[in-house]
Length: 245
Image: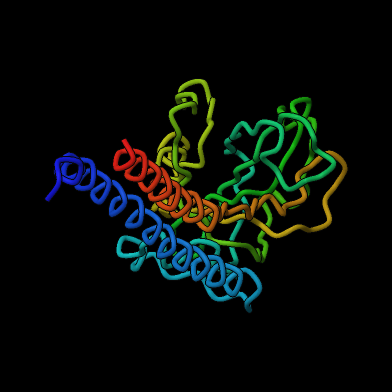
């Protein structure tokens, strides 16, 4: 083995390790791509499926978010006219195209016949409709049949402000915390996004679900594979230059 070849042992080993890492990251993103495509397909099937009965309260403790999130359901109950929670939504966080401004999701308790309760997301209202008196809703206090989507608790990011139950300032859809602050009986660990419906002037009209699941895994995989290929080209040029030298 020539002196030049011996000098390439360490760079070759390092290049092989780096190449293996980059390729493994690329294949991992391909696996994530298949997982995300299956997830999106499952959610779309739930959203467009026939509404199912809401599981009984006896099953709520065993329910997993991935098994019910976005499931289309039908439920009957009475809208609690006295209790309400508002969750702040910034611009771009609502499906209501007419509401290109900050506002709130209106969360109203739905009291079921068995004594349990579910928080119902009735839809979006702008900032000037924060006061319930400014948006009279004839359905409140009445027995209603709701069709909507089961929603899991909303995840908090590093930039999400802290909820303040004492002041009624909510920034995340946290059914348990909101239900506790409203003193609701037997609250569900999930909420329901009501489907869009006709509403009185100024009141929420449902349809608040934002179905936006990013799927950038293909581009991520291409990036890792591209870096792996670039590494080989650079290493090949390095080897040729070293041998010529």
